[in-house]
Amino acid sequence: MKKLILSTAALAITAGMAFADGHGKTIRMGTEGAYPPYNFINDAGEVDGFERELGDELCKRAELTCEWVTNEWDSIIPNLVSGNYDTIIAGMSITDERDEVIDFTQNYTQPDPSSYLVMSADADIKGGVIAAQTGTIQASFIAASGATLVEFATPEETVAAVKNGEADAVLADNAFLTPIAEEDGDLQLLDQKELIGGGVGMGVRETDGELRAKFDAAIGSMKADGTLNAMIAKWEIGEQF
Image (cartoon, rainbow, N blue to C red; front, side, top):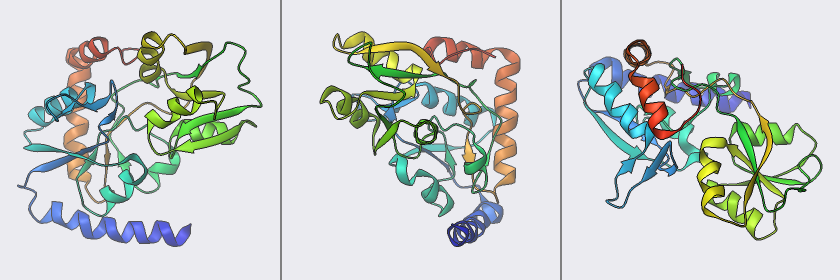
């Protein structure tokens, strides 16, 4: 693990030099594109959702030229560190473990409660099999809870695991699971919720302090003038600031 962190840090130094040397270039905004309402690909094949609208506004306020890049969740941090894009804006909760490898801006959402999506109200969430997306705060929570964790690469696969009987429940962000439960009569949300994580922030390389400061200031200005709360309400992400 130490060797992995050291290697990651070395990549970050190399990639960060590009920003310091002349980031008049376009800032590449990395997202998953598969986690509505935070981020998804629309019918036109473009990144859409709360974080697309938010990211575009942040780039405008920070006076940066930005473009959007999609990347699978399970490699989203390594590909930031290696320089494939310059930020992560992908519904990523701020955690101490992630903060050892990358830096975060201040949070742009409050911690969103995590909910259990089930086929039956009597599903065993304490000792049963619970699905979660790999590398998420929910997966870490389940692993420490005593239940049996089964991990999947995409959020869609976690829901499918419940529907095909491979798992008793999915644990994921309430904002992601609520519309699924509303649209599928075979699925329901349990009343029990878990509050984990420190809210969602933008991830940047540890060497890109200048870029982090620009986005930090932009997020702060959106909190101050109410623009961020209006977006949170529009996309039904969770509690406002």
